[in-house]
Amino acid sequence: ENMEQALRLALRRGEFELFYQPKVCLRQRNILGMEALIRWRHPTQGLLSPQHFITAAESSGVIVPIGYWIIEQVCKDMQTLVDHGLFDVSIATNLSFRQLQDEPFCKALPRLLQEANVNLNCLEFELTETTMLTEPESALDTLNQVTALGVTISLDDFGTGYSSLAHIRQYPISTIKIDRSFTQRVSLDHEADSIVRSIINLAHDLNMQVVAEGVEDDTQLNFLLGNGCDQVQGYLFSEPRPMWEVLQLIDKIL
Ligand code: G
Ligand code: G
Ligand code: NA
Image (tube, rainbow, N blue to C red; front, side, top):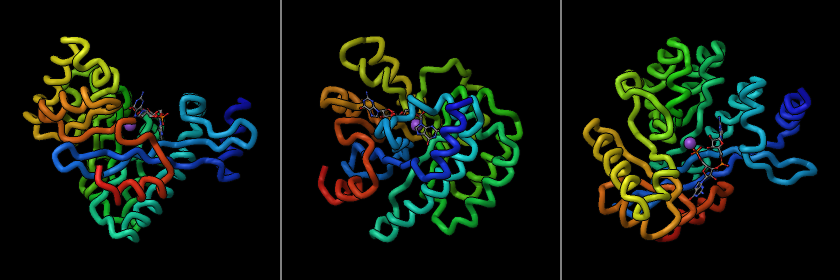
């Protein structure tokens, strides 16, 4: 109850910020896109990561109004990329099951995006398996509508859920993201090697791209490169950072 009030107040006071983590193309070693990750600049507790408030935001439903702000901010930041001549760099944002269960949100989303005056081919939504399994049928409609506008959908934290692929296949998914719990066991654990290899092959068989999350060292990077993974995200290249810092990184050779 208190947390809900605090989150609503934080939203009104403009205390949320978006940080961005680059997604690096393995073949070209350049930044193709970035994931938006929310932070709360708390007046007394400092910069709070989502693990401190996302669950509360979801269970209270405040993630819905916060989610509108996130989309608005992402669209502004997409314009910033264009202003820097970065016409092909995409931004991904996480959509929570709670947002997709909200009918007004689902109804408003396609129109909101069309009115945003951004290149929707550069916008991506990340959804977890659990989100896809718990959302109502009507959300599928919304996802189909936004993909028709150019937005792409990626399946986040893949491997951690229990979804049947048959069920997931009805969603317009273009990318699979390998959960960092697998990435980080690569080369240490033969089972993780097999799982990661299978996910990469599966994704490619289904004409999807594969992104590995949580890449922290060269051993992991080389394994992923050797097995045909398309993109990586992780501390090896960059932690989530404010947009201006990511812009500086884009100018450098990785
Ligand atoms: O930024 P960090 O790595 O601490 O994020 C932890 C988790 O919080 C992410 O895995 C993601 O699921 C969630 N999260 C971060 N930003 C957002 C956001 O903008 N919207 C939603 N719904 N979840 C987010
Ligand atoms: O699942 P999702 O993409 O929402 O997760 C993003 C979370 O993962 C963020 O909290 C981010 O800080 C964290 N993260 C990103 N890269 C790495 C990494 O290389 N190592 C670890 N341990 N966490 C990472
Ligand atoms: Na994500």
